[in-house]
Image (cartoon, chains in turn orange, green):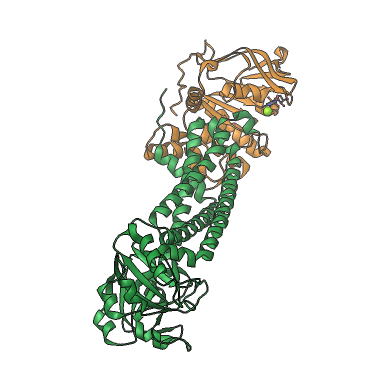
Length: 241
Length: 389
Ligand SMILES: Nc1ncnc2c1ncn2[C@@H]1O[C@H](COP(=O)(O)OP(=O)(O)O)[C@@H](O)[C@H]1O
Ligand SMILES: [Mg+2]
């Protein structure tokens, strides 16, 4: 975590580039299209809030950017790389280096301690135990949980769990942080603490941050707010600060 | 893009996933161990039956019995048959034998006394006869001395000099011996005259239960047997002569049938236990569909997750299998069980090869039970799997 993004992009060329991005799901005869021909560019190092009613395709878009889902049509280029052309293995490898994903419900592995949860993504990087320890400790310190290494998820509050999840997302020093309603399940104070943390990661470490949210207070922190409706961007609702 | 995973870190992960669910892991291990125990015991019984009843190329022993009699209590032959048997061409030696058993029914703890003429027994001992403790002089010296087979001595905790009683017969242990033949080593040899005197009222001296006849070549077993039976065909006590293993198979046929049936039950129970264990493992893996989806989001490939699941199954199979096999081995080694019916012995033998096969099966079941759901959760769509609760 040296504060530079590892894609080597400057802000002039977009880090994330969607063209005619479409995702369809088939349910029997019925075709659901949560994303419908989306065109979008996001600059490296930017902080973007993604808003819109429930079912408008926010999570679907985030999952495509995260490389855990594939578009039905259109292209998605991130850091100049066309994700659609990557094999499953290569895409997994790309995720492990470029993406930090933060879920609404934290999704920590229940049988692992906070420390072990944060260590999990590092197991794929062939690091020594000592190096892993250094990075995990640093990440947990960054989220303010130095004294919670040995705690299991069930022994932590929701806010603390989410901070462990954030530590897990940043421990590999990815360029992009994606958060799907990260404060959706938290009380006001915990939510504010989590957003302070995410904002600082954007400001201090230069992470590109995309946050899906329903909370106007969260969106207010972002440089840019996008509105999705029925799988399309509502241009009139876009705000740039 | 090459990937260098941290093998020790992943191994620690496998161990943590097992150790942090101690109840589930314990029950699974217990199930595998139980199945393994069953498997080993059933196979030990089958091995015992095989050893005692399946003819081998080196078999050279015939048993001469009273025709149409199947129990040592009812088979009575005159001892003077000996001279005529010894006169038959191809007979190397013949030993008249009076047999008393503490229990004629099938039992796990029967003492079989074999009364033999001391000098001819020592001159022509059974194949593989080795004295482990004591001396033959003691056997010669006193009338109530006994040479006891090692498994029998172990089962009864007998040492040289001990006096023990069974079937109303009281003897002193003069020696303990090992032998290649299950029929010999589960018996106590005593002087023939002593057993004839101790015999139940109504029987007179000069009677024996059977003759054990050693033939010069296994090719001639049938011919010599036929010759013996022809010789006594018109006597008051006609004989029925068979190779020893065939004799045991006939005498113990009820128990052999029972062992066959028990094996079936054993296999069924084994299948049921393995089915339940596999089911438990599959359920455990399905509980992890979401965890696996999260790990794939972090960059784990389906291949790595599948390997982790397989490693977990392998560990469960290995440890559970080893536990069950060792338990069975201990029970068999300490118990030295020998199923005896009508004087015929079937030993329950612990064979390391059986245990190894069993552990192999346990590992295979573990790996498959881990692999199948592991593959499923590794292949399914991440996004769909993340939505499962
Ligand atoms: N894996 C899937 N299979 C079928 N339908 C899906 C799947 N994922 C999302 N959808 C549907 O797509 C629509 C948009 O979902 P989503 O992107 O999660 O919306 P939101 O904006 O609330 O995050 C919803 O109607 C949802 O039911
Ligand atoms: Mg959503």
